[in-house]
Image (cartoon, rainbow, N blue to C red; front, side):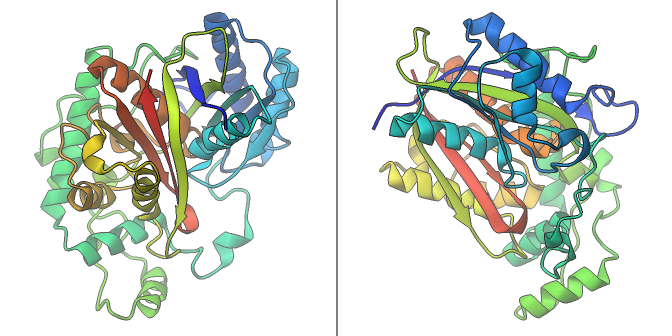
Length: 379
C-alpha cells in the first residue's frame, strides 16, 4: 500500500445561505472553478487521475456530475466524479481519494466538496428517503433526542454555542484561516461569525425544533424507552446553513512538500433516528484501527451537528476544550453539507502546523445515521 499525503488545501469563505448572502450569487460550478484555479496557482497541478467532489443535493445547478463539469470548464485534466453521502460527502470524497492513492489505482486525486444551499435548497432533490417515516425526522429533532438521552441541559448547550462563536471570532481576528482561504465574490471571511455575543444572546432564543408532534411520535415509537423529547436546541446551538466549497490535493510521490499524511479513515453507521452519533463512532473506529487513543490526538475538527453531539463527544472521549474545535466550528461558521468535510480537513491540517502537533482528526455526522472520519499526521 502506498503512503497517502495531503499536499494542499483550499476553500472558499462560507456565505449565509439566503438571498443576499455573500456567495448567493456565485454558482456551485463557479466555486469549484475558483478553487481549481487557486490550487493550480499554488501547486502547478493542472491534471489529476481523478477529481472527486462531494455534494449532498445533486439537482439543478448541482446536477449532471458537477465534478466532471468543473474539469471541462476549467481545462483541468481529470475524469471527475460526484458523490453523495449527505453531510459527510466532502470528507468521504477525501477518503475515496486516499483509498485510490493507497491502492495504487491513482497517484494524484483532487477531492473535496461543494454546496450552495441558497441556490439549491436542502430536500429539493425530493429523494425517496425524505418520504420514509425515519427519513422525515429532522436532524434538529434527532439532536434533541440525543440531548434528552444524554441528560444535557439547555444551559450547557447555550454555553457551547457561545464558546464556538467566541473561538471563531478570535480565530478570524488572528488570521488562523488565512492560509487555506480563497476569497470569492467579495467575501473575505465566514459570514455567520458574530463577535461580541454574550450568554444572554442565547438564553432568550426559542427552541427551534419543538412543535413537531408527528416527528416526535415516530421517534417515541422507535425509542419506547423515552417518555418525552426535550426540545432544547435553538438557532444558536444548531449549525448555520451556508454556501461554500473546499478542495484537497491528495497523492503520493509528488514533487511538492506534503502537509500531512493520511494515517487512517473510517466510516460508521448508527440508528437512523438518532443518526448524528455516527461521526463519533467513526472517530473511535479510526483511532482503534491506528492503535491510538483520543489522548494521542491534539487537534479534533468535529462538525458541530448541534451542541449536544459536541458535548457528548468531549465527555465520552475525554477531550478538553484545548483540543476540540479550538477555532470555532460549524455552529458559528456554517455548514455547507457537501463542502464541510473538506473545509474541516483544511482546518485540521492548518491547526496541526500552527501547533507543531502530530495527530489530528476531522469527522462529520450525516443524515440517515452515517458518519466518517479521517486521521491525519503532520509532515
